[in-house]
Length: 79
Image 1 (cartoon, rainbow, N blue to C red):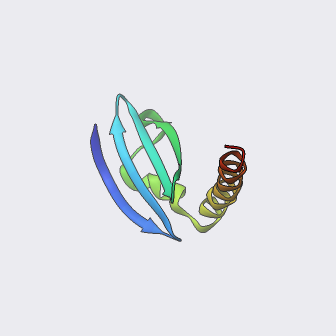
Image 2 (image 1 turned 60 degrees about the vertical axis):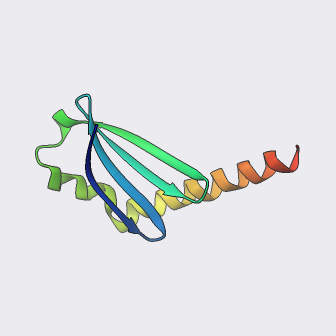
Image 3 (image 1 turned 180 degrees about the vertical axis):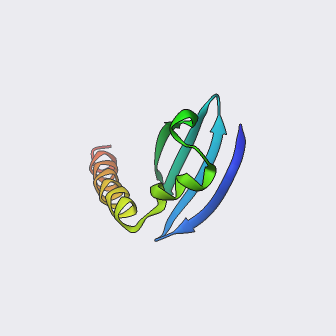
């Protein structure tokens, strides 16, 4: 697995890996993470990955993080 890039944007830790013919896009916030797999065949150049770091896409990621954090809190309260 090759690390393509790692950075933080909008309080989200973003890691991009190249592995087994795919790019793995990993978004982390606190104890929660989301990973997306994109075929390397769909990306002509690594710079084309920028579409996954736009404000609108990160807003969608943040909404899912809010739902995931709430789900985790609800389950922890049931312990």
